[in-house]
Image (tube, rainbow, N blue to C red; front, side, top):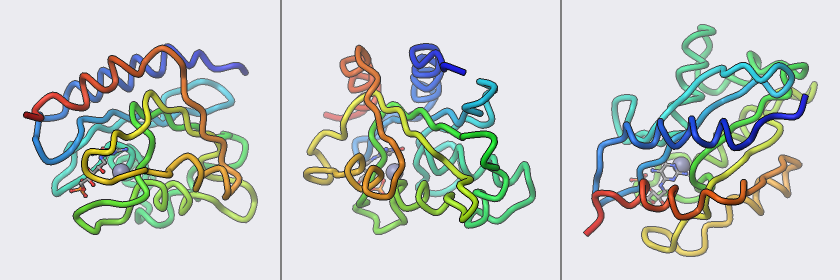
Length: 167
Ligand code: HJL
Ligand code: ZN
């Protein structure tokens, strides 16, 4: 099934708008989708869950909870036939100033030996060089065999939402 990328990116942007504006990070939204049926499996936004949580992390965490799995084993619920996809308004991070586990590593953790886990990542905009310089999320994902594709046409809006709360 060919997914309607614009539709899911709009959903992800709506998630991002729920995130509280902060000068110390971006407001990002994420939507986890069954790539075979188009069903939305989970959503998340920056700081949705307690603690210093990122959007992709929240979407995966909520999905893990739904399946009574610890975060590290969420890939077991993302079975190969789902061909799971995540839409995120900003390219997943490879480094966090807080030292928390970056979202790229969390996405890579979903991979299982039977080809389950997240298989494609669609993004709205690259991470600007504000907190971390030269985020290489896309390259790291692609090296591990996960496609990372920018959905054209969302850069301006994704950035505006992300930077609300910045001086
Ligand atoms: C993505 C998010 C989010 C960021 N990126 N893809 N999703 N907040 O939900 C990236 C930015 C980090 C800073 C600060 N933001 O968030 O680089 O405090 O927010 O760990 O590096 O790090 P912490
Ligand atoms: Zn992140």
